[in-house]
Image 1 (tube, protein in one colour):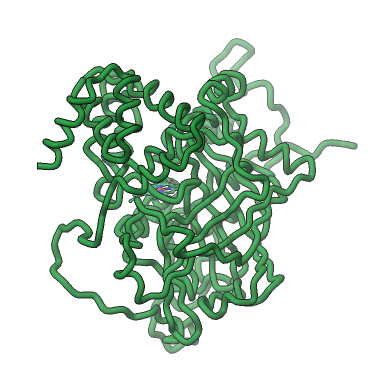
Image 2 (image 1 turned 180 degrees about the horizontal axis):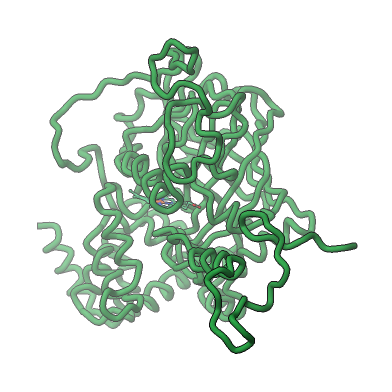
Length: 496
Ligand code: HEM
């Protein structure tokens, strides 16, 4: 079989890909050599900014299938309206703090982002493998992330920064406890659950709203590495989870997750014993049991990593009729942050990139946005570029108005006032751990905190765990050689 002809970027055939054009055998290279300049100039621009967080990831295509006929009672989204309905999806898993070349098995939360290509537009579920998060106000996010990255002077990861911030952020104790438990080092992306973490709003066709949380439960079950196994895997194969996902699907495997919701009546929000919009808290499954609504299956590898995985642009603000934001402050911050970073990372027309394009919408995207870098979808052709117009251009329809809800109070910088115990759920998590898991959890914390060189930072961090559970606090003190009386005095001062 004869090979196809190599071309330049403007499609012209190339005669020779091994020798630059020179003036004589030993002479300088000619500027007229477009084949060479085209190649070098494109190479020079290969890197786009890496994601500021979740830079290392792996992805796959698949489908979501509805398994319950009950969903229209709570949500009018068309892709959820009948049993057996399948919606194509693209899912990207990731670690959070490391750079694009970092190891898949590092202790870190894992990102769990799913793009549903629905007939009413793309719905993105941009969650993690943990049901809660470290903070509950978006203004803390850049500071929090800086402490997980490199020290501005040494360019090394810095346990002082890490624990300094977390110790002064007591609401992080729950998520930090998950992070240093076995679940901080999942064996692969197939062996972990996914969570919206945030509360979202479902609205049915009568306009009745509900609060929901989404849960993706791995059908393979959770499997984790111990800290030692994770460290070994980082050395042996830093791409272990990426490789596992790709090879599983290449061999015909179909990683799958049950998709469920926790459902809360709208009026219950301010009666529940925790603030349901505080992303550092879970809703107890005893209070709000899981209701299975579907299945997510991954069955097709990307053809090209950069095109499909690196250019994938998820956003919690990509919603469809029937799914709306809750007042969760973190979620509200994220609604802005993701499209903003995509415009920076991929350009203003990032939704035209095939992996992001809402291709399942009949007739495609129709609006009056025009121009900008890489307007590659015809740019609205000869149609009108303003609205209202007299030329039959697309028009909004009140049928798609979001659910209205009442808000009141002062516009001010203010924390949530609804009960906000930062330690009870972290303590419950510890008390529920089997003894061997408790021992590993404490050893993981001691191992990491041992790198802290400033005593007060260490004590403040231990104090949060002491407040969650006295036994946990005492065992950490022992492991770190800290006097428990010092911690309890620190605790008393913190309570003043
Ligand atoms: C990625 C911001 C909280 C899950 C990102 C990115 C930014 C960001 C800028 C990079 C996106 C890109 O370049 O494509 C924020 C801010 C937060 C926040 C400002 C809080 C105010 C969270 C929370 C979760 C989460 C609470 C999970 C519940 C993710 C995931 C990705 C991501 C899964 C990777 C998406 C992908 O695979 O492309 N975040 N984030 N983030 N974030 Fe957040």
